[in-house]
Image 1 (cartoon, rainbow, N blue to C red):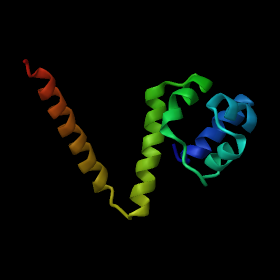
Image 2 (image 1 turned 135 degrees about the vertical axis):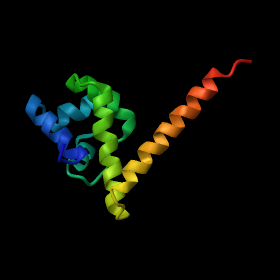
Image 3 (image 1 turned 180 degrees about the vertical axis):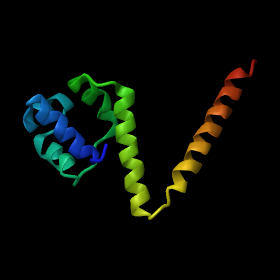
Length: 108
């Protein structure tokens, strides 16, 4: 997706015909904060992803992908990182997964 996460939320909201106030109530936010999120002036709290998924009947894992890719992109842009950063991050994810699997295989 070529939008920020806030723009993504705005599109979901307008496509469903919800007002800021209606969606804010579903997310347990006030409409001013939701407006700031949609306009990129405030970050969306990842703890509300499940509420957002429920409100729009979205797959939570796909929504997490959208959210975290936005977070990674912002940090990479902020620190002027190369795309190689993503390749190395993926390698580290695989390493962390392998450690986790090995630890779960240990029998006491």
